[in-house]
Length: 243
Picture 1 (spheres, one colour):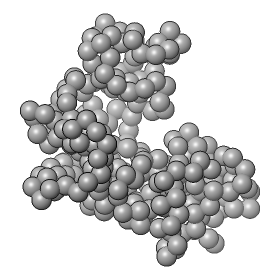
Picture 2 (cartoon, one colour; picture 1 turned 90 degrees about the vertical axis):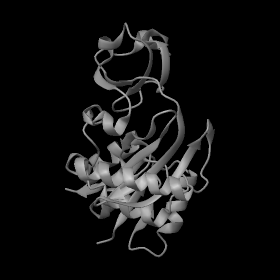
Picture 3 (spheres, one colour; picture 1 turned 30 degrees about the vertical axis):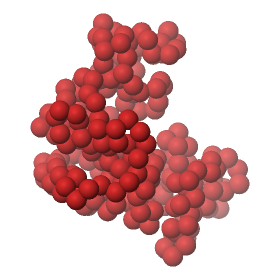
């Protein structure tokens, strides 16, 4: 039996880096020829998938994979000790009258996440399902954002991706690394049982408030930024379970 990871047919820098990282690994990364279709003869050998969330869901059904991800409402149950902001979870219709809030879909991206002065300002609002589940958050300013690929309560690789309103993957300072790992260790002690063992966690610095948890994302569809591709690959594999 081969250990195949199904890659999205969409070529990206991340998928290319994972492909290179797999050369000396026990895994074979394969895009296959037919878009979003894994041939029958390969399905038993596919142990993981990486790509856009909808692609991953479709391929997982074909190949008998369970894709690990946090519960939809997970972020809203995390203490403000770690989020440094109030986060709510509910149906879109529950927040119609709120103003100046950050809004994000809880599952697939039905609309662009962001800060909205009014909920009805969401592009295409009239066509949205008002029963769809969303997160809302008070508006904060992130000075730094960092992506962490986590496996078995340990950060395997990490990379900054946003600093002072600009894309930035430069190394963290020694003090920033220390603060990041201190926050992570405190967080994981309390919340490890609420998330999959293989997950992506984003942390950052909120202006005026300090280090905080941003969100959790499934490893099988998360961007790498400047993370070590070999280490990220192992987390991605473990984030998929063969049924």
